[in-house]
Length: 167
Image 1: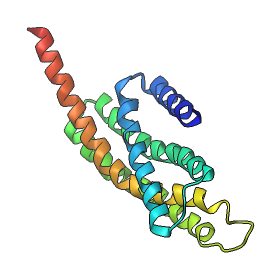
Image 2: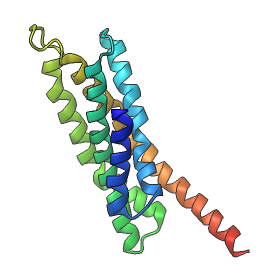
Image 3: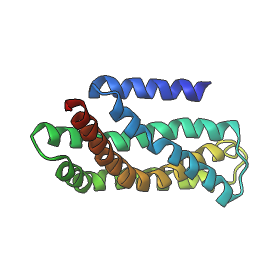
């Protein structure tokens, strides 16, 4: 219930400033891939999923959405300046590649000490750190590939719908 509530809150918080119902859905496409990354991280390191793993996944959703938002925001700004969608997407990916990669690298490597900590006090936090670290790592590739492709696909679908509406 809490995760669904968080998803609704994320959608709402994205939809209001973007003034769009479709763009938040495109941005949130990366969340399931982050979850897959979190599950793969647990599998790779041999940890069972726990309630704290799912807390990490909820936090992961916010980080993944932030990466996608900085990409979407630049696409929107370039489109508002009159640039064609394809050029806006390509230029946005070029300009935002470094910030997205740096966010991923700093998050992943910042969490590695906690993941490999062996003290008894830290053991219960390790699943949360695994979820966040591996989810961000996996979702970054998706953010840099899936989000731009989704924008182009959505634009094409919108153009087809508009052409059919004029007939």
